[in-house]
Image 1 (spheres, helix red, strand yellow):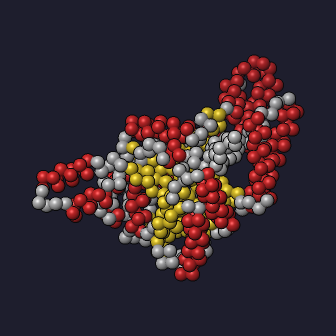
Image 2 (image 1 turned 60 degrees about the horizontal axis):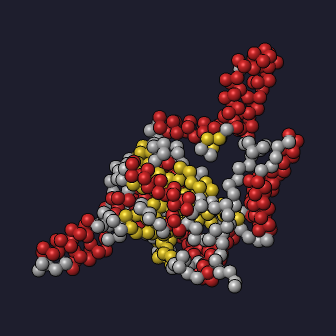
Image 3 (image 1 turned 180 degrees about the horizontal axis):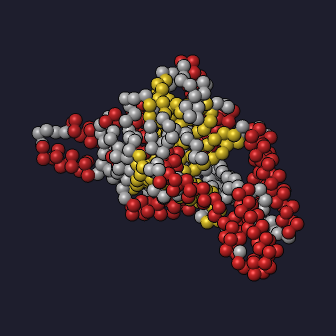
Length: 472
């Protein structure tokens, strides 16, 4: 009896934890070296009594350089804490900038993003492009809907996985493409069309029944959930940070249309490039999902956001609180391509899942791999010299590096993936409950998540705004 066909599988590389020497970064080595110098000087100056007297200094430095807390070295928390307190002291953690008033104007200012973004209409695409002169990138946003994957047979799933791989290969082959973002937003709402239809076609001869049914629709308006999927592609501006000309727009449109065609082959139905009105609604929903769920007017009326206040572990807006997580570790074993089903299709309320793929040039990827292999070889020699045993995680990292190098030499592309998850709620207590539910769903998907404390503003912008922005 033959084994059942389980379909295609996916394998992820481990999170690289290598350092300059013995897994320690340059900063850690400097701190540990300083602790060693202090201890040696104390011993040569006053013997063991000097070592004991100086123990608070060298012991503190040794702990700061070698111990990790929350997945980050103690010395790595220092710049984060300093930056957070500096921003908090200067009032940079609070803003009153609106997130929805984008339809009438040319410039766009959003909380958590430095500088202004320029909106440029593109007739070739029939949508709007977002130009960020600070980074010299132009972003187009494509609305997409899936054609089904979980219930497909193994052959259809394998075909769609291969087609999506070819779409990412297109991004690797086009040097103009800087970043690709896939954003799946699940939020309350979805009955606006039903309410609008009932108000237009209700039976005026029976006002009692009409009022009763209208009340039922009003009460259940925020109960259902609607899922939206966007694919944002950021390309290099042909003229750098200067204003785009008509020929520049045509060139950018060709790059975007090329990747959009590859996405459709991968099994996504393209709903067109979004315009100013849709962009205004999507951006407002990222900051105030509750207010947007109850709004039935045009997005141009969604203005007057009361502002954003960034906290250590969350982001507070006028109608809710948000917390953004980073997927610090993808599944370590081979998994089915639908492994994110608990996060995407489970019981999700006001949750945004974002995947950012950044193509790496082949020469840069090979340099990084070879530098990492040299660092691992130096660590292995040092461990052999001091008699330290090499652990299995180090051998797994080396195997991942060799596999990546072999794939690059064979002609494949290399991408740097980043996963972000944002949970939204109306209050702090409800947010913690939903965060716990999300962490449970992530565990079912065999992913490890970590809350991005001290940087919730920039993390929320990267996770919830379909602008294909980098995380760091």
